[in-house]
Amino acid sequence: MPLDQLNHSIIYFDNAATSWPKPAGMMAAMINYSEQIGGSPGRSGHHRSLDAGRVILEAREALAELFGCNDSLRIAFTKNATEALNIALLGTLSPGDHVITSGMEHNSVMRPLRYLEAQGVQLSVVSCSSDGILSPEDVLAALRPRTRMLVVTHASNVTGTIQPIAELGKIAGRHGILFCVDAAQTAGALPIRVDDMAIASSPFQATNPF
Image 1: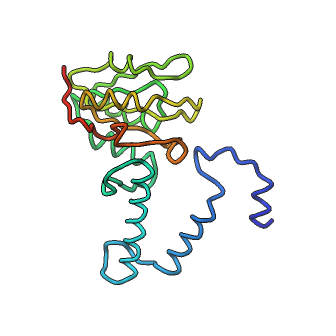
Image 2: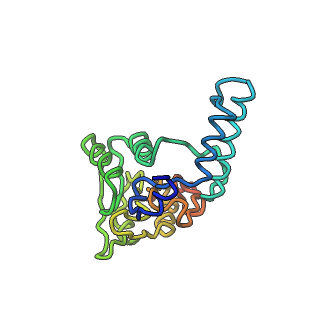
Image 3: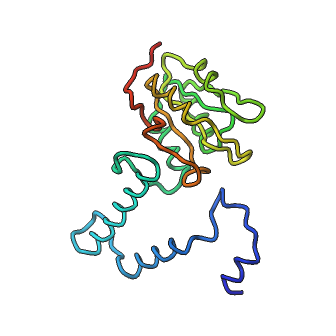
């Protein structure tokens, strides 16, 4: 059966795991790279390598605009959200650090956090309300002198609950705590402004007042 007919005969509910069918623009971009560019960015000085680098630069600029980031060089590309979260957690937290998360987190957050807990990282899992919402007041109550990071999913892939990221970011910003947001379910679908929401680092450069 031709692909265009196949697409009309399937109702696909697994986009939260893997999007399908892929947008026509994405397919066209991949074909254009394979047929017209083909070089590796940053590896050579010939025009195909420079063209590949230009594609990456344009992608960085577009993502920085989409996510409200004032410096596109802060954009880092990984294979997927799970790898990105592992890099953020395993590459930042050390024994003795304290991290706060919610009871609604995906395994891509909870498994590395439990691993880190076994290595000496202090972990506080804050319970959510009956409707799955994380209370900013409960996060405030969980703060400790060694709190290094707050890790929260933007939206649950199980319940669809959307967390108050802007309010949680204000807490992280005021207390100088790194704010890691799992936006696997919301990136491109809900507004995310990393600078305004203090995601990744505090715009206030505050210190934990404990």
